[in-house]
Image 1: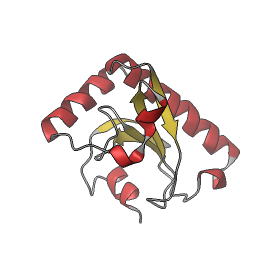
Image 2: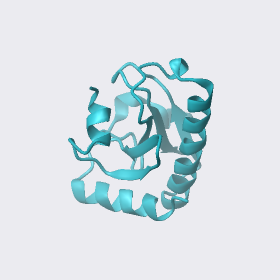
Image 3: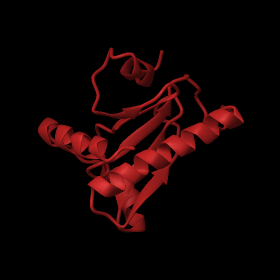
Image 4: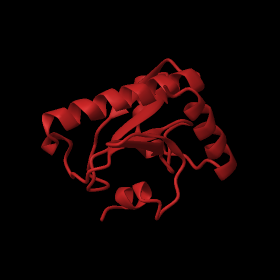
Length: 129
């Protein structure tokens, strides 16, 4: 069982943004920027392109809804998207507020206080439709 499955099952706490029957979104604990969110399928699949077509479509559409909520909650030019897939063997999409191409440099992850993380999560959740 991956760390993300443990998060989904409530075994590890997270700053949950949204979930439905198949997908789950929560704040990254080492964010590039405030609002950096991970979107995952609940079904454990290591590589994004191993997902069935309908699962991949559903993941992208769910991620779009999360991105819209982030953009409404966090002032930024765009919501950047990245799929790296090497850190955790469970498909995940990174969504991060960006203002330039350099804002997706993963070497620049930040530490954000628990209070700020909760505030950010609440702000994004309030904009999720």
